[in-house]
Image (tube, rainbow, N blue to C red; front, side, top):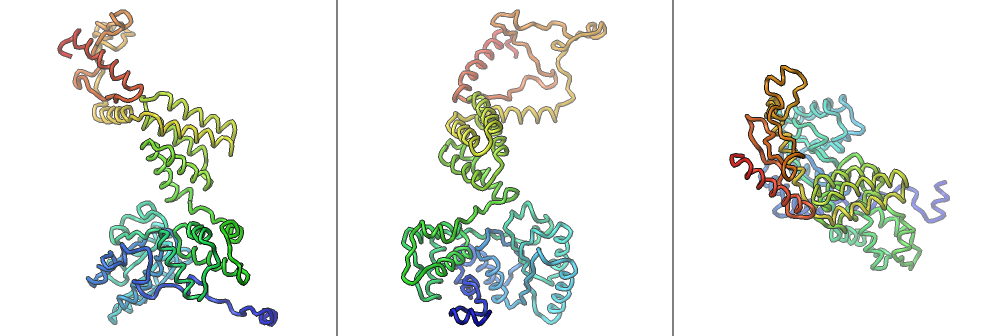
Length: 437
């Protein structure tokens, strides 16, 4: 078989991937993370101080977490040990810890790099604490997931979290230029196709280099690809989106805030991204209902009606036809007048209920189903509002020990403007009928 490859002019040994050959040799060569390794970066300062400390590297794939960890070991003259939480167990870790203590005994530190550290369970994460505390290891854990959700509080209290950013288009372009320099040939792409490849990388430097390799493999001598040909060659990379993890929470948060901020265009963009990534439309429909009651409320009572109607329409139509109903509801909510007055009033009422949940309502509004209760004054003096002028009695319904409270303050926007005027009118009537109220 190797003879056949040789006859065809192909390499018989597996070459190192382009991403591996282009791995930075110094921190200065790392692109897209100037806030960490630039002249005034957080890691640059730590190295200069001579105290690195244990660290958690949090960021998307292909942003340089492993590379930076290796370079830090070189900068500090620590022994570099790398393990993966996917393949390593307790026995292997214990062995590594003993080896690290042995190095410390002869004056050498150990930088232990743990890839995918969030995949260790809570008990396994606790196993790092003793060797972090006694200085046997300097831990650098890498994770693509939010450390606040995935790592023990005890571990986080002993390490600093440093955030790696997705590479912007300028950084991806630098990576591609380095690849072209190493390969001594340009990428056979038209300008539009090159820009498309940069976007396809989605902030992942390793993905950009993998895509570049695919392009070079596919190109015949003298062939130049346009955007459509590029898409056919490399296909389309799936969105980086885990419905159970960080991407899920980031995008639903962005959608909610765009609706709250009355930006229908941004709202549709984030909704479309989640649909495209395979998010459960019924989850999105439930969140849209929540937006209607939290951020529009009674400024437009129809918002909740439309949000519920969108959920019912999706139930009836299914995907993809029913997705349009959810999109329509999102547009309606984004363009509706906003009010969180009902939301604030409800939270205030819950606080009062927890603090004063044992107070007795005034006897005047309680029924008296027994003679004893009637003799105790239950229901005595109650005014039936429909029999009063303007169908309004102005009675005090609050417990005597608490007194009248103000919880709901409608805005001057949308339908709440009418409610504001109505409440002001009732307050005026109440004052006229009971000056002490």
